[in-house]
Image (cartoon, rainbow, N blue to C red; front, side):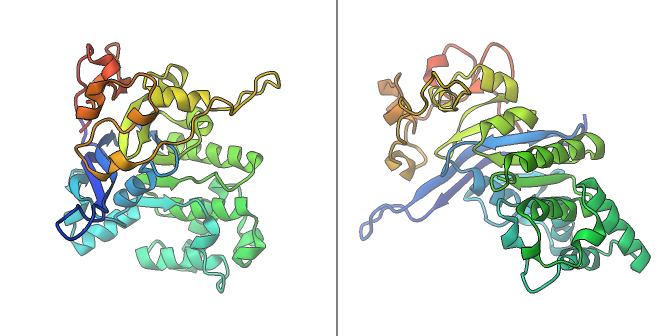
Length: 336
C-alpha cells in the first residue's frame, strides 16, 4: 500500500487564553481533533464544507503552514510539516500550492501579470533559458484557457476576476504540485466562470494527478466536483463521507438543516422561512465541551451536554456522523 499524500491527525487549533484568576476565558476552539487522509493515487477532490466560522480556513492555513496547530500533526508524504528543515520546507512549498478566494489580493498592482510567473520560475529554477521559460508559461496558461499575448503584459486591474483566478491556477500548475489547497476559489466569480474553473480543477485532478483540498460553504459546487466531503460545525466534524452520499442522504441534524436551507428552483416553495439563525458559540470556549450543535438541535439529549459525541460509522460504509442518535453504530476508526 502506497504512502498517503497528506495525513491530518487529531488537528486542534485553539486561539486565545483559558481563564485564570486574573482574566476571563478568551479562548476559542477553532478546530478540534480533525482527521483526514488523502491518498497519492488516484488524485481526488476532498471538500471541507461548513458555514462561516466553522474552521475551514483555519484548517487550510494549517495545511499551508501559515498557522501552527495547538496539538496534532500534519504529515505530507509521511513527514511532519512542523519539523521540516528549510530545504524540505521549500520542497513542500513547491508541492503544496494555494488558490485563494480573492485573486486580486495576491497580485502586486505595480507589476505586470508576467511578474507572478517570473518569480516562480526563478525561485524554483523551472527553466534554463528564455525559450524554456516562455514554453512553460504557455503550457500553464493553455491549461486554463488563456494565451500569453493576451494577458502577460497587462496589469492586474486590466484583467477580469475570472482571468485573475485562472492565472492563479496557472501559476500553481506551473510547479506541478501534488496538492492544491483551494480556499473558496469560485465564490467571487459569476456562474459561467464558476463552471469553467470547476472544470479546470477536475481536469487537473483527472489528467495531471493533482489532488485538491477544496474549502467552500457552497454545497452545490461540492456536489459537482467533490469525491469526499467533511462538513464542519464550530470546529468539529459533523458528518463526512462520499460527497453524493452525504448530500443526498444527510444524517447529522446540522447537515440536514444545511441541506434543507439550499433554495430549490420552484417558485411555489418559499425559501428561508424555516432556516434558524446560527446559535451562539459559548460552547466553543473549551475543547471538552459537549456537542456544539446542542442549542440548535431538535433532538438534543442530556448526554449531548456531557461530552462531544464520537464519530459513528453508518451502515457499514464510509458515511460517518458525530451524533448520539447513532450510538448503536460502531465508532469509526480515525482516518490516518
